[in-house]
Image 1 (cartoon, rainbow, N blue to C red):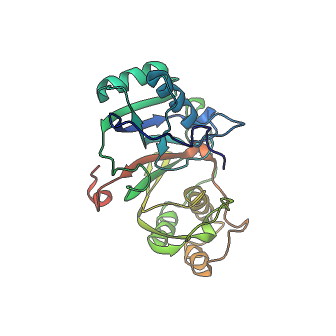
Image 2: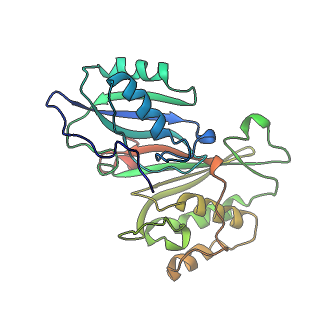
Length: 271
């Protein structure tokens, strides 16, 4: 995947400070986080705002690569600025320039050792499904619609089989780049229901390309009765590339909820 023209960063002045920013965004109109030459990514929007403040190019590094149409509540990024802008003032200045669909929820100084992606210990994603006869229009950008009844207990059972350390190649798409491994560790996977609203909450040490949407799509197949919960174990054991049997759930239902930077904080609900 192509990166921005300011990928080649210059040697930083000793006066530079490193910042961490937590972003929330509506991904509907964006091509995802990553900068792209032929589409608008959130990274580009953030970099342009920071360049306006810094009066020179600023490279922003994200905690992950969310897909086109995917939303975020707690996306994390880091960057350097030479201008002495206090974090609270930086948040206000950025939000006054960013489009309404992107917001800096919090900014802070971080040590040079911090890296938004490499320092992360885990991530939490949430997938939202609305099961009813009609989907209210205001929910359409953020909820995946399902008119068929869903078997809650079957989906919960299927979700439990994802927990643990497995090779998830059967639940991921080809990222068109080499991967060191397709093994990931899922810490927890909950399926919650409130009226017509179903929420899949998954926490893990990391996720492959389209892995969460593939797992969500398979849970929906189980919920509709098209697959048995035990099919999850079968696919994980096979460790073969994904086939049409594993559908990718629509991007609009997915949100990156939180990134964890402390060991075991994903179990304690910490930051």
